[in-house]
Amino acid sequence: MSTIAVTPAPDAASRVTAAFTGAAAALSDTADVAWRNLRTLFRTPQALIFATIQPVIFVLLFRYAFGGAIHVPGTDYVDFLMPGIFAQTVAFGAIGTAVGLSADLRTGILIRFRTLPMAPIAVLGGRTLADLARNLLVVAVMAGVGFAAGFRSPNGAGGLLAALGLVVAFGYALSWGFAVLGLRVSDPEAAQAAGVPVMFLLVFTSAAFVPASAMPGWLQAFGTHQPVNALVSAERALTIGGPAAHDVLICLAWSGGMLLVFALLAARAYARMGR
Amino acid sequence: MNGPAVEADGLRKAFGQVTALDGLSLAVPAGSVLGLLGPNGSGKTTTVSILSTALRPDAGRASVLGLDVVADAARVRQVIGLAGQFAAVDPNLTGRENLRLIGRLSRVGRERARVRTDELLEEFGLSAAAGRLVRTYSGGMRRRLDVAAALLHRPPVLFLDEPTTGLDPESRFALWDAVRALSRTGTTVLLTTQYLEEADALADQIIIIAAGRVADTGTPAELKSRVGTVVFHLGFDGPAAADAARAALACAGYQTSRDGADIAVRSAAGSGALTGALRALEGRAPDPVSVAVREPTLDDVFLSLTSGRQAA
Image 1: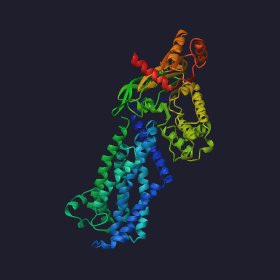
Image 2: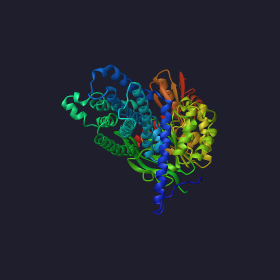
Image 3: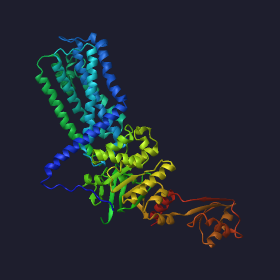
Image 4: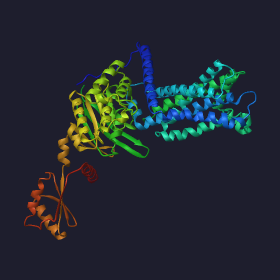
């Protein structure tokens, strides 16, 4: 009979140490899963390429095709546009979290993870962490595209970096929302189909591409009170200039609130998967 | 450790309106190999999913090495390995990357994961392909990697869900050897299969399940003798000739049934009994115009078991 290694239940004295070791192990598991997701992402780069091509096309379209017809008082249109593009990039990018998780659900990799002695939260933590890294990359590429198209961030580098920080934090919170979706549908195409309309609605009713003042009143009322618009407003305040504290706080409140609610929902959905 | 390494009692599981498990109980003695045999949809995968903590039962309880699979799920995961049709390896990682990842997530430590990975790649004949992406592997290689992935932390209890379904004979025999080797080192194995032959080759004890319940249980020899009925189909030149033949066969002690001009003769003695049956006809009935022999299949087993239950 082989020896059986079963961790004994911790006594009261070692509970604190156990909590720290547990947290360290959970972080290590999260890093391992994130590493795996990034490897997979770069070996099937189609998704990454499409996630970049779409916003690039939007930059070109709005900067050169429609931009001439859109007048924003007091600023160059390209400086107005790019914060909208960054928001659009992470909003649609978040759908990738749902697609990735549902693909893992369908292939059975999630089942294997569920039966390993790893920290359960690492599956979701590793997925969202990898998507955060992907967002950093794609947003950096978009900034480069923006500069090439004449974007200058009038308020300086500090403002721009702060704005991009908000963008990435927002994208991370949103990823957890799409993690909930990904765990509910075991079909990547369905996850994609469910995610795109929601993001379309939020991005195009916000002031991402045109000033909200051009919209009818009822649409403005919705469009200016939703999270993507909060992000775009905060970014513009930071990159174009003017009083920023209020907009930034509203954006951080949205991101923090979404992160809290979505992370709880995602953890619950994961725990209930086997029921 | 005394008693069974794996135990299930009255497991029930339904997915919506579909009942997958309907009160299934089983026990796997420590160090033995149990074959769970059944057709598609009989509840094999659901059973393994529950025992390996991937699914929760709706009712009933199960334990591995005395640890409850629901209440003690975290500790159960330390002592089990799972491989099979529904627990995958990552096609976009190399074989080596897959094993190292699963090793680290199995908490064996970074260095140990490295060493075990190389050992297992060698053991399963995958060293040469270790640096290739798994999506370029053949079905047999992928299945071997899958089994290797279940062994990184040397689990004392191993679950294999249809490990050889869809494999060519050579790959199948290689996997059989691997299972036998594990069993020799004291690993308790529960394997599911659709093939009587596979259960016969590997298992100490077989449980046949149908419709989410245990339909029969026994050693391979016991089950084979119980279900090893060969059927001869004898065709005659008309119902009258068939009736005469049937009377002659009944006199000689054969079990028969008639369908038109055809007679089915059942024999537990194997195909060798055909000669005897034909001899019983000599001089008492016309010669048959056609003879066919049908060996028992797993379908016959399930048919005989389910009809037996209805009759009881």
